[in-house]
Image 1 (cartoon, one colour):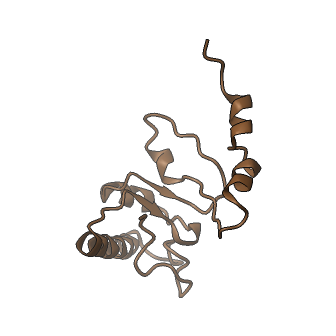
Image 2 (cartoon, helix red, strand yellow):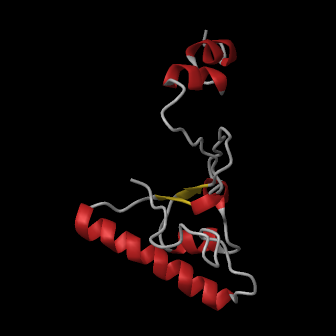
Image 3 (spheres, one colour):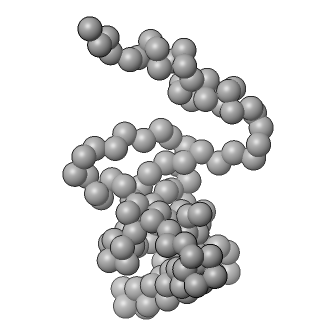
Length: 131
């Protein structure tokens, strides 16, 4: 289970977990932290789960949200950008803008992996020789 906000998955004055127009740093910090901690507490108390990753609702990344997530102990976060990721050792900031693919069950996993170049055929042509 990944964290996806408690009550910031809407379009009612705030788009997802982004900042409201004119919102101060202190007000955003309070709103984002309270929302994130509410769901984190519920997941821990009711499910025994402590999520390591956050998925930004609507892909909206409020200025300062990555730093707040780091302060709260998250390992990384996913945007709505459909892309494969290259993770670099030591680049913790890069872990807070990871891409993800939103799938609704179709096409099949095999077709999907082929489309994004992650099937066995694609890996075989890209894999370095190990002699």
